[in-house]
Length: 186
Image 1 (cartoon, one colour):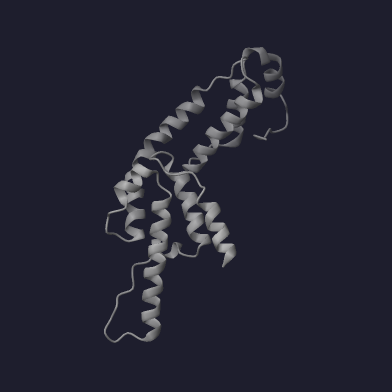
Image 2 (cartoon, helix red, strand yellow):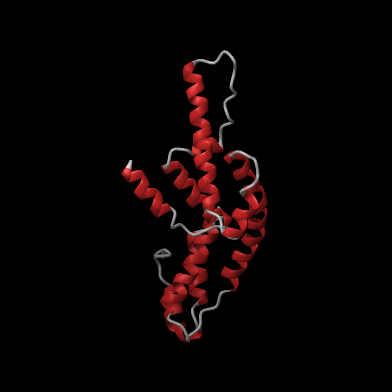
């Protein structure tokens, strides 16, 4: 039990959702909820209580309700203060909350896809900053593109990055472009 407590305290330090990068936040929360073994409440409905239910069925209902409470709490705990204030008073299950967040913020993510592609396509390296710093920035943008489940052929990515090198790197650019073997992002 102390391992779960220790793990949960570390997950509490995850960045809070502030209304942007929903996909990234959602993936991190999903991982946390999976680790805590409560993620199933996001895809299953609450079992119905019946008058003639068995002891086992009653236990399953109570377990689901408890796991839903834990799941909902971790979703709310992962939000910034202002978003927490908005969603804490909704009388809904973790599944309903998760679906509501998904429908609201995934639409906003669609416009951010265009923004990310534009950021990558229009990125220009400069001589005033270290090339590795700029390369890592491009990798971060490509990582965000991948998080949105948009695929880009690696050879196109590599070629684009080479083209983004500053004019100062002209000879190196030419050398890389004319290599016979395929280059990877790494």
